[in-house]
Length: 75
Image: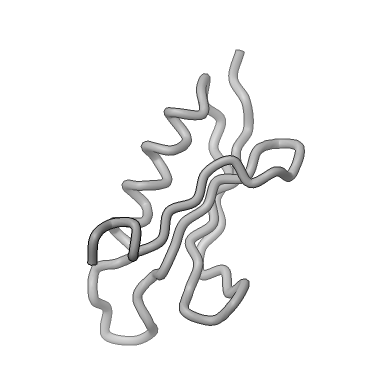
């Protein structure tokens, strides 16, 4: 059964959401994979704005089920 997850890419300010998308996937692992791809793309240097600092996945009930910051990546 597919479940809806919300992926938020966070900026440098506390609770600053740069991007928010909803995905329907079969497992949490699928949502995590999608979140990490989105996070990698959001961290590429841009002309304007700060690069993403973290990404989180929120399940349909509003609980944070996955979180990764740029520091977890080994930067």
